[in-house]
Image (cartoon, rainbow over all chains, first blue to last red; front, side, top):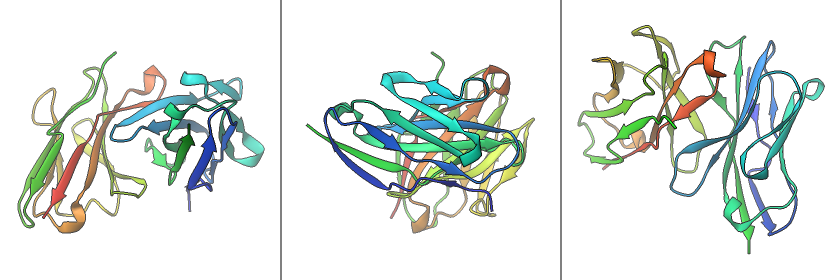
Length: 114
Length: 114
């Protein structure tokens, strides 16, 4: 079945630590990939997206993600996290094999300790 | 920046009552969606709407649910007879593939069924 997997459910880091959140998908065909962030009590906000071209995409707030097609992965990274990055992070995929539907991973809850 | 607007932000209803959640998508978008997020769980797709009809729906979207675009601006989700397990955050999103494919989400309606 087509799915989006985020293997880290909870991550706790200290400020200035580096972050990498994993995302794997099982869709075939052409994919568009996204990372969304949900700060406590707020709605989903787009961090970054990949459609084509350079597989290393840069988003807002110093986040970046790398699309590795051979690994069906789109991991999110940030070299140095801040307390304000505490949030839940969702990977999401649109595949041309699955209509126009955005499918989310289960989310990773990040807590950054000051 | 254009926004997707949802009202109300919080609705409390008694089990068995009907609720209507309202959304105003971005004006030039053509695809509209409802997602829900039960507390502590992943964001789940409910339904997509295009050209004044449902284009896809999930297993969650049973006969108790319906969507409508009653005029040129509003997009509503109706739950006919609410159940306790309908308690969740409901997100509306709109999408215009020509603008790069990312969905814009509203701030959500927190539905509490008591």
